[in-house]
Image 1 (cartoon, rainbow, N blue to C red):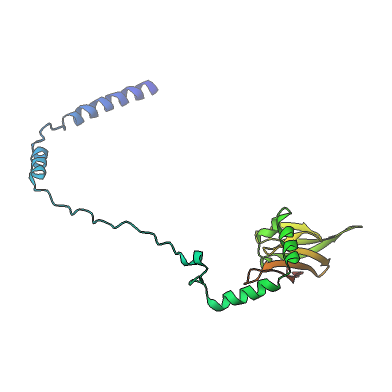
Image 2 (image 1 turned 90 degrees about the vertical axis):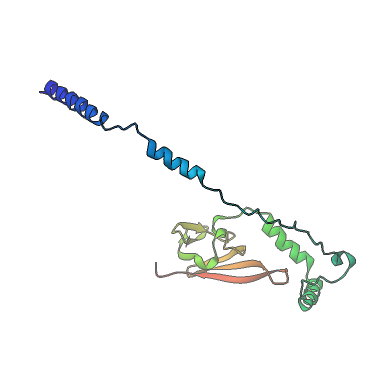
Length: 188
């Protein structure tokens, strides 16, 4: 049966190719006449691109001549000079050194309010806090670790929360510290 089936396929294929071969028309006179009509049309006129004047840079020179920068407000500049005069440079350097001379930790990539304290772990020596990040990953932290984007150093862990000391720049560009906390999230 398979040999018969194969032979009948070949006969069917040969017959259909003979029938389809008779449908070909080699007369292309209508296509040639259409191509001649398109080529005989008058071409359109394209406007040339407008000329652009080259950009001429203006360099503000008054700053080099000890004049006030017109792009900065007068009052903020005076206040900033007063604040900078009263800043303790040793304290500023301490903050800068603390920020630069350490490796960043994983939880520093998140805002403090997006982190959740979900519990604590304790052994004989240490009390660890369990913190969940926005993606749902759980992290174990202890006193001395950093969390949050404002260089928040953990200074105390208790069973109901974490106390931090954050370092941030105020609007005058001076480094300051503030206390922050992360409370135990009892919903989880």
